[in-house]
Length: 237
Ligand code: CNA
Image (cartoon, rainbow, N blue to C red; front, side, top):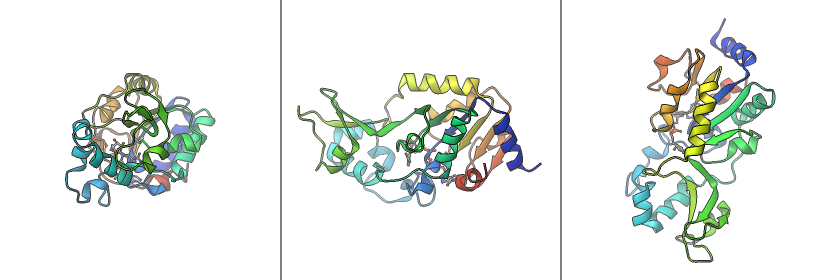
């Protein structure tokens, strides 16, 4: 049996599968990731991207932060790709229990997935830090400089910056789904950003599948590894 046939069989036998993904899930929608050769971390800026998208930098230089955020991190107008769409179908068919994602682009929900744990939040939700009024992403996109609420407070994207904790409820839900999973498919993530990457340790089963273009630190733990593009694999599922 080929690896692909094995994966297909495991999916058909599964009723509680979880997909755990990262930026690589959305590259085929046209959104660059961070660590691929053409990713954000290989471009030149005044400061390292990790510094710019940290909480202390946001506090110190909000104007610079928002200009960078608007230009490099606000993926508006993109469409779900085959991977998002197949995952939504697998949930509908009763095989997939949840998607756990590090992405902030909202494309899983746009493709129809219902049970999505967004570990790092979403650019689609934005709140005033003073009065907590909600704003759509377009308000942040169209603002000049720092986006401000009617009350004068800064409108902050509901995105987890470096140095900020993850949302406890989202984390608990993701852990619960992974603990109960009968199949864990991990894809499009370098598995280098913690605590998200540590979620793999909660999986108890013996069907861990890794699909990633580049090698990851967890390749040797997996029961099946594909070093391939997600779109190519998911188009066959
Ligand atoms: P990363 O560290 O950039 O790693 C992405 C991984 O995906 C790399 O190892 C690539 O080899 C792999 N990859 C890229 N394209 C494909 C593909 N088509 N098929 C298979 N593998 C592919 O990204 P992580 O998600 O691991 O890092 C976590 C960060 C990146 C999170 O905090 C995200 O919020 C953040 N991010 C999100 C987006 C988004 O929302 N679309 C975009 C860029 C970065």
